[in-house]
Length: 412
Image (cartoon, rainbow, N blue to C red; front, side, top):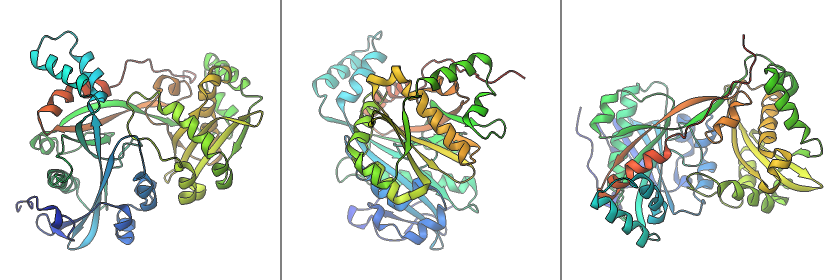
């Protein structure tokens, strides 16, 4: 195998068909609008999170400075792969508490000095993270290839291309660490990732609900539960009797855009690790892009929006639960969070979906309605001294907290 191409000057980074090895090449783009539509459609057929308009929408995210990089990979100038990366800058304040907690019982002078540095310079950029994947959604959304590409070749192309383009990010600062996320199985061959000095670790699991049998309604689904969980579900539903549930069309989403975003922010602020914040018009834009494939439900009390959920209807009988918003002052009184989950289950049943991907938050609550954890693997590589100091704390922070999985179903 020939040696992969070396990093080049920024002016030449975006020339088409840059040589990789053998008959493989790639073209790099900074904006989704520049990606050849036909090439992307040939590679990532039917994946909503690789939709060109959706990628363009994510470029408008805020809160943390983020840049996008897109690579189309070719074999003999025919498109065979697509690589999606996000470059995110973090200030020192994000990591101060992590390092403090990790090193509270350690006496290393270096770590103590580093902790003081983080506190003093909390508003300064500390770490530039190069992520292969989408920091807004969990799952394998960092790259895709046509089916004929062997797994080994696929991962060679991914690792070498990431290594090359991350080293070229010198215009606004070098990359501190590279992250490749989220995979349900270890990527192979394992030795290849070791050669590139990646460390594998697990993060909070993805929660997947697979309907154990065909059901025609939420009530019928709940009948599959044991008495304890069946009664619990019914009590939760009773608290929603005075709540009006409405699927929102594009006009209604725009009408309630401010309220929707405010409810989303309430959830965002409670996130364990606040990363990218959605643009204000995210939900209306998603509805315009995906139409009936994207669903938004509003929950109203006395004509006031108090919660919402959103979801994607994917191929292969899958529903992808997306962002929600909750008025936390009313959450306990009306069991808003639990009832938004029940509404998603109802939608999946009505759409004849067999699987719900609930994402990786509130794991224990989601298992009470039948979801089961699916472990996710990530790969990280530190690129400098600071990222090496932060990496252990960050991995520990991202690893799942202890929680108790529940099984609501009747025992066979």
